Length: 151
Figure 1 (cartoon, helix red, strand yellow):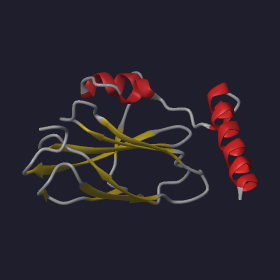
Figure 2: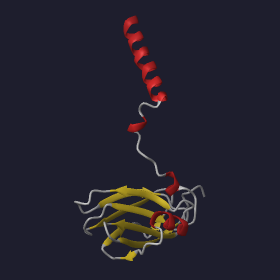
Figure 3: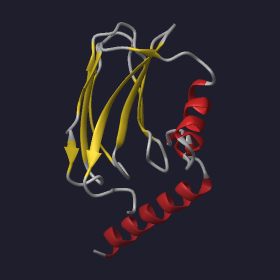
Figure 4: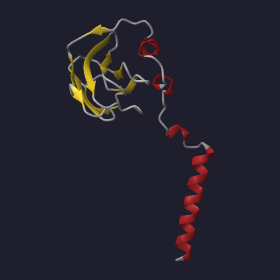
């Protein structure tokens, strides 16, 4: 019994030491914290896409409630058959941090994404999808009854 305890204790202490030593940093995903900081919607667009033209399209289908009872949990489903989409962004224009989600996808498949996002107030839910050459944009207005970003 004592040997098993010492074995577990040694394993636990070793894992704590290794995690603190930085040897596992390569395993952590890179977090683009600058993209998700508190800033205006226009500043977020400039940071993400510089001055690139966003092409308005109806080929991105957005499924979201017309009225969300609670802005803390707004279900969103997006899909498209646009070819070669490699990156998809979900933004909310009235949020303190407009970028809600960022997805890196394989160019070989049509995308289908389901997420739950927070909305501080009623506003535009914006989906931006990038292929190798173009940046596409689709949006939908969602009314929020009760804000979800700390309101």
